Length: 348
Image 1 (tube, rainbow, N blue to C red):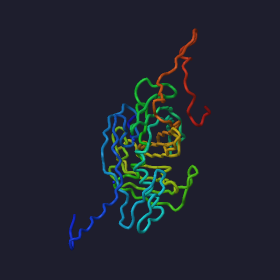
Image 2: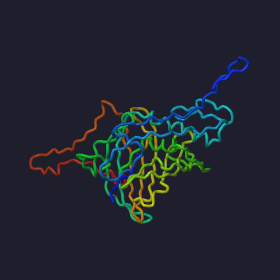
Image 3: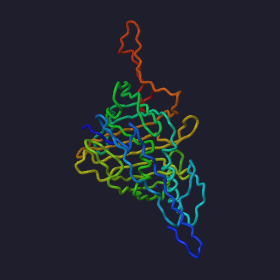
Image 4: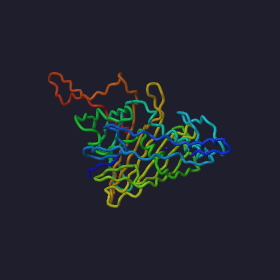
């Protein structure tokens, strides 16, 4: 089956002495709506067929949890507190979560213009414990410019696509560059977060793990397989104790319509430090998407790696040509140059 899976903050007087007006409560910054022909809007996981035009819909953005007993800490770009709390302090896990939320709400505004190679390996499996069989692989040049994503130099199994985008080749997702992060930590109403007692270490970073459940119906996770579904979701996030940055997001859908083509969609995104033009940025480095068809034991999986981050500028070039150099007496079909296998399980 082919489809489209979106795989995307009164005055009065007394005794002639004015009473100063109360201070307005701090509000979280509302992310600006992104625009552009290639702006993904909601995080998207798509499968097959021509991409349909999507509208970017503005919606309410959650405020950090408000409590008159405390105020949210101001943090710098690295998540360190730059102002002392007034009054009673939050429990450590709640304070860390508020720091993570403040960073997430500013994440997209701090992203530079960049290029990155997106390598996608698509698999299909059968059974409760699928033996994944590779279907194909994609290599795409992602251009992130002024909060817009665009795709070029799309190669499928090493061959350059002459027309069409990656979404027309099969399952494809958008939203890894901050949209999922905002959807979890900037959702309205705020999901319920429950910290786990045990800490975990990921990539040398000690993390607090929070389970969360989003009660919003419909949700902001848009899935398209034949029709469109916006189910509520649940999952976990891993937050670095030192920097308050989200290291990993795991999500899965809840209550997909009983007549919908799939009954399960899962997502994982891993973040890490990368260098762009001599500066370090916390960016997605890997993602995994899984979807399983209803009344079936068939599942599909996309494993994605983000490689070779670099600054987008006048010195950058995105080549979309395929070498077809031939010599006298040589078969042109054999002279085409193709890159080695991108499967991480095979040597290049």
